[in-house]
Length: 422
Image 1 (cartoon, rainbow, N blue to C red):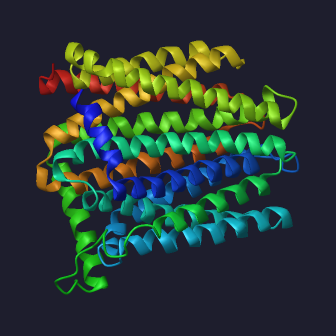
Image 2 (cartoon, rainbow, N blue to C red):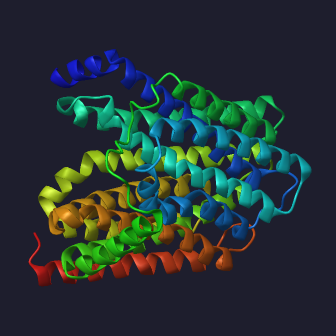
C-alpha cells in the first residue's frame, strides 16, 4: 500500500509529471524510430535485405549507447539539462526528417545509416539527462520509487510507440518515411514539453568552475581503465561477465537468423514477415518477464553461478532441438526459452557484479559491462552476416551457438566448484 501511496504522491508533483511527460514522448519516439529503421532495412519491398544490412542496423542502434555512454556524463554536468532535452529533441526531430527524405530519395545505404546513427547517438544524452534530473523533481524519500516508475514507464512508452509505428505503416501503405516522420513529430512534442520546466530547475549546479572539457574526458577515460583493472582483480565478477558476454553473443547471432527467417523463409509478403518478427519479439519479451519472476527462486536453489550453468545448459540442448526444423512454432518456442536464458543470466550476473565489486568502482564496472553487452550483440550480428545464407536457414550457426552455450555451461560449472559457489 505504501508503494501505491508513493506513486500517487509522485504523480501529484507537478515537475515530476512534466519530466515524466518529456520521457514518455521521447521514448515513444524512440520506439517509432527503431521500428521504422528495422522495417526499412529488413522489410522494404524495394530492398533485398542481407544479414550484413541487419548487422549494420544493429550497430547503428546499439553502439552509440556503449561508446558514448561513459563520456556523456562529462558533458551533462556542464550543460543545463533542460536545454539538453529541448535542443536534443529538436535536433532529433530535424535528423528524423532528414532520414525520411533519405528514404524517399533512395540514397546510398551509408548515408542513411549516418543519419540514423546521429539520431541514436543524441538519444544517449537525453536518456542520461533524464536520470540525472530526476532527483531535482523528487524528494529523497521517494527517489527509489521514482527510479522504478520512470524507466518502466519509458520502456512501456517505447513499446507503445513501436505498436503505433506498425499501425501507421499499415495505414500509410507501408511507407517507412511516414513512420519516421511520426517519430519526428513525437521528438518535437517532447522538446516542447521540456519548455514547461524552469530552465534552472534540473541543474546542474555550477557553483564551482567546471574542469576543462579535455581534462574531464581524460579523467573519465582513466577511470574506465582503473575500473577494468579492478575488475581483473575480482575474479568472480570477471568470470560472470565473460559468461554473459558469450551468452549475449549467442542471442545476437540467433536474432539475426530469426530476422532473416521472418523476411524470406516464413512469409510471402513483407507485411507478414514484419508481423512474424513482432510476434517473435513479443514471445522473447515474455521470456524476459518470466526470467525476472523465476530467477530469485532459481538463484536461491542453485546459486548465481549454478543458475547461469542451468540457463546455458538448457540453451545448448534446446537450441538445436527446436531450431533445426527452421519452422515458425518451434523457433518461437526457442525465442521464449532464449528470453528466459538471456535475462536470467543477466540478472544473476548483475548480482555477482554488485556484490563482488567495491562500491567506489561499481559505476565504472557497469559502464564497461554495458560496452561488453552491446558490442557482443553487434559482433554476433557481424559474424552471423558472414555465415547465414539468404533465407536464414543455417545449421552451422545453430551448431556454433549450441557449442558456445555448452562451453559456457561447462566452464561456469568448473568455476563454481573451484570457487565454492552454492
